[in-house]
Length: 134
Image (tube, rainbow, N blue to C red; front, side):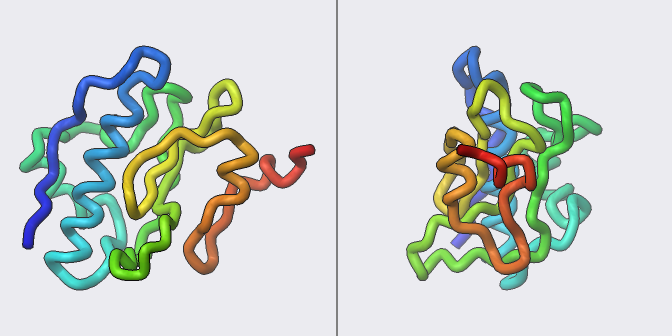
């Protein structure tokens, strides 16, 4: 079964194009994982799928909200049967206490506290600055 990658949908103004960007990356990440039965190891693995979706150029992996490259957890094979919603990537820095986060089940906005409490794959965690919350 092929999910297919899509170009980013129109997103609300507050979140900019980040939801669309990460939705496209997430769809291609999952498609690659199912098609090749392994996790993508780098942006190069997703490049052909992103190109088919019409997404090319140096800004494909850059957030339009914070201007930084997305943090993508390469080499993490999503367990879509387990039912856990696991973080696969996120913006490098949150904006106004909101982080746009790519998970196995979709792309969501999380507060810093929600992001810190999210489920991460083994060997990964929320950015260090979130650990000083309270």
